[in-house]
Length: 141
Image 1 (cartoon, rainbow, N blue to C red):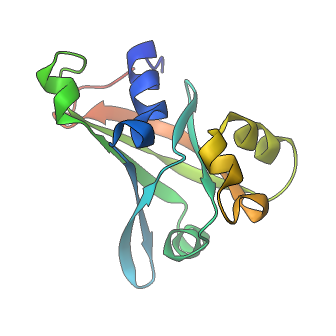
Image 2: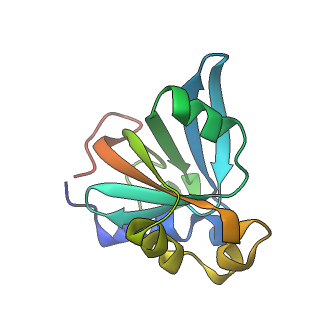
């Protein structure tokens, strides 16, 4: 699926612009939703983020690697940058605790994320997309 340059810019700059991406996971104790300030469009088939908190989201991924990432920016809808201000990305997460993929994800992080407490021991998470759509169900790709 081709992800537009517009959506790439919006998601990749979400934290800096005040529109944090949310990661939804499911585990034995039920669902969890976590803000992920490092979320990025990695390529046309993947999102990625840096897992440094190593709390409930990571625990849930060991149980079920299916995830949903939600990007919400109603200002982008109102000013015409998006036809729908809420985007959903569905996929399966892969954990990269070492190796080239971990390093590739780290290299794309903002300086704030690279220097944040816990960044040096973080885990690169690649989300292979199954589908992506706006809140109305219109595919993004």
